[in-house]
Image (cartoon, helix red, strand yellow):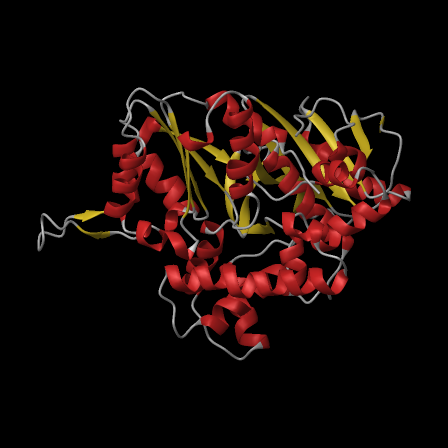
Length: 435
């Protein structure tokens, strides 16, 4: 079952031969290799590029282990593109496997050579177009922004979204929605035959790939159980405001383990760097400033989140909120959690200050939309509860309530729009950037 992923493929096509390093980032096993080595390679060969002019180097493959040495990698690529009369395309997969080594010509000086040095050198080869992928945001975001400056062109890849799964299955149905809600969108899931195989894949993938990557990269030897518990506690609290202090308190109250907030914060950052989770900060809509903690964490793939909890906490409202967050990020929005201050006097005449929550503020340029995730609005009280924060905002930007059930989209007297989750994700709702 092939999913074309044209949204990402077209980004690569538009950047072809632009003189910059194309950097495809994202969670391991989300399809970066397939995008480059299959979809984009096929595009090149179908448009006149000879296969012998395309170099494929998957560095997570043991057969290419020698090229994890930056000097060997540099020599390999330069040897491949030596015919200056031809155009070459170089795909280096999982660049974070390249180790930083001591400069052999400057031993004892502390000078090192890493993948950044190699790639910066390779991009000066005028007859080569360089593409790299990586699964660590610190290496491929912070480091590249600092060292590559305007030489890198980043494409962020995500697991399959709902609309891609609909195209893969050839239908839009409750079954497809339940599959997505339960097992997420990692590409391998589509080819697995049954529930048992899907559960085993997700559980093994997290432990043997994602957890192992974090432990190895940060040289963590004795804290695996702490790291494991932190991510499981985070998985159980999606959709809820939290912070490192709350997680540390949970360790002490539930596990009888004392752990510092700083350690929790550091370990959470390791999972963020590996694209496993993201954090959404709270933003005071009226005060126009960030509040700080508490904040919210979301999983890049809800199937991984469910696997961590052994598929026991299947609250559809929280998973739906996580899916909406991912969808907005995928569509190119910068996404925060909104907070609206509400001041009023109670029946006793006392001044009350209360924060009302807006699930998401999605910003793009000067524009924004406010999105509320609601399992249902099947009563007047429920509808008033879900829209109270949106009404208090008061500005003219679009406000949307996304509900679980399939409904005909409509707009109420306050200008608030209502739409079903599957219609929203499938691309039938207007005025949204679509994949």
